[in-house]
Amino acid sequence: MTHKEKYNDTATVDVIIPAYRPGREFGELLHRLEEQEYRPRRILVMNTGEQYWNREWEKCPILEVHHLEQKDFDHGGTRRRAAELSNADIMIFMTQDALPADRKVIGNLVCAVSENPGAGAAYARQLPRADCRFLERYTRSFNYPEQSSVKSLADIDKYGIKTYFCSNVCAAYDKGIYQKTGGFTERAIFNEDMICAGTMIQKGYSVVYAADARVYHSHNYSGRQQFHRNFDLGVSQAEHPEIFEGVPSEGEGIRLVKRSLGYLIRTGHFWLIPQLIWQSGMKYAGYFLGKRYRKLPRKVVLACTMSPYYWNRK
Image (cartoon, rainbow, N blue to C red; front, side):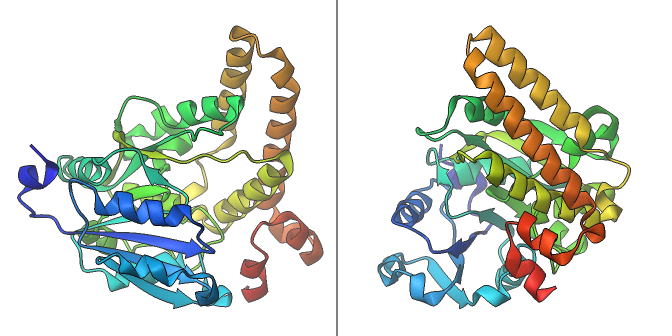
């Protein structure tokens, strides 16, 4: 039985993808979405920079593209605008570099939202790509385990900051709950998914981790890239104390480092320990400075961020 037969087409689904200079792989993403057992009604693409768009992709019959300029892009605001264009029951947000691992991703996300009363969102499991480095493969398994889970306000003591975790690499949102809780913030340098999920949880809803909804997505970031990424992560937390204040993130980071170190020792990959130390140090340094960005000169902030356009608008 396909997911469409199971749900009798009762829930309409729009897939929403912000894009910037999408490459050849983007065509494969569109193809895999079209081939899903639970077929989306529309694929809404919010494309930054019309000059980088390939019009061949518009042959996809369910594709709808909206072009915007770099100065108008925002991690929260652009997704918020896209959500306003959708009247589907469930909105699935994806990034342009994620690929569905099979034909059941959409159906499994719809199932996760619809079968868990009070679930405002559900996010997919991220599998490493073929070129993913050894240490990053372990990080994927740490952040996206094989077991599904449902997280609510009662789980703060158990999961800490991970209670609010959600990833727009591939995540479904119940449109009704999304609207009741305010949706994506109008301005966000990063982390718009956790801010939205955290708001839902604080208002009594839950977030589902759907391990059976799987997408391929991973990055081989350098230490420097990790620094910039975590700087913006720290900024996002500093700008939204209503979500993150009183729920420290450092403990989860330390747990990942300890688990990763143990894994390298158990598997005999001792030569990767310096890399782990270097990357962990860069992550923490970026996060530490990002949390305290208001005390930094503008030049330092611009040197640390991976999103200079955000500060130019700010």
